[in-house]
Amino acid sequence: MSVFTLRINGHSRTVDVDPATPLLYVLSDEAGLRGPKFGCGLGQCGACTVHVNGQAIRSCITPLERVSDGEITTLEGLGTSDNPHPLQQAFIDEQAAQCGFCVNGVIMTAKAYLDRNPNATRAQIRDALSNVLCRCFTNSRMLRAIYRYAEEAR
Amino acid sequence: MKRPSVSPKLCADAEAALGQAGLSRRELLKTSGALIVGFCMGAPKVLRGQVPLSPPLGQLDSWITVAADGRIIAYTGKEELGQGIATAQQQLVAEELAVPFDRVTLLSCDTALTPDQGHTSGSQSHPTNFNGNNLAQAAATAREELIRIAAGRLGVPSDQLTAANGVVRSNTDSSASVTYAELLGGRVFNREVSPTARRKAPSEWTVLGQSIPLPDMSRAE
Ligand code: FES
Ligand code: FES
Image (cartoon, rainbow over all chains, first blue to last red; front, side):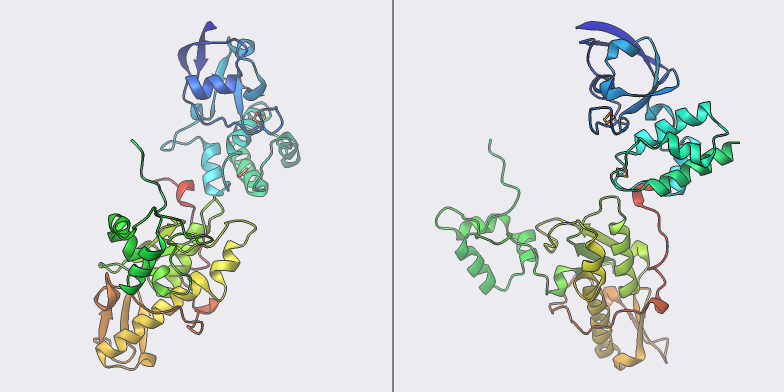
């Protein structure tokens, strides 16, 4: 076990865990953040996506020690139910979820991509999202929400 | 301490005794959890091959209740999974019973209270509950039954009465009216779902066909 002081959503948090623990488990079990989801645990679906220094990473396959110095942002760091981020609001406006399990990964992946590529075309956005899986096939509504946010933010 | 089992189990003679007493399964469950044990001489056994106590599909009271205040309670065996079926079923019941959307409370998939409709899967919930039977037909039956009772109460033939907004009213004399609560509030229909009750045509719809946000995908503005 090792002690780490992490920066999560702008707050410091000290945890005492095995350094190889996947970041997802630390966020969920130590910090109580349930935005990132366990989908496959293999880096294949995207449900567990969080940002480290603004970059989208798959927290299920990321050992804590690799990112413990970074600024970690989870879905909870974007907005709240009362004050959602404009991208989250776009998902509400488009009713872009069915079961909702994948939505964390879709929003976090889209946000990191659009922060770096604010003028991305719709085709580029589709490409950037192509390896985030939605088991419910809600993709077209989600893409509508992301285009709406991207185009309104310009 | 052992916790009581979640699904109530009836032994055969308890079933028979309650059947003779004329108790519906739902009434039975509300009132007599402890009573059941008293009927059982030996160890309780689950009736094989039967889902204990699910309300029967053919009975109107299995699907629809008019509460004492006139609200409509609807019971369904098809569960919300984010696909919007709870909203759609609430719209369906509101439409057929001619009440506003918000005046319907939908109870889903409680094995003691709602009809057993098997799985919620394979895009089968709409075909099951919106086509010519089950929830849709129950709601249409309930509207016709309320109109039939109102006809007796008001002394006006059924075909001259219209149900709207939870009130049955004479088409020719608007002072002749009676609310659902006055007609049946807190009591049971005690009849079967009618296969011939008339479903509303899409051209008459005011609640169905509206796009209503999912309850957990909206927020207070
Ligand atoms: S849970 Fe991490 S990629 Fe699927
Ligand atoms: S909404 Fe269910 S997995 Fe995407």
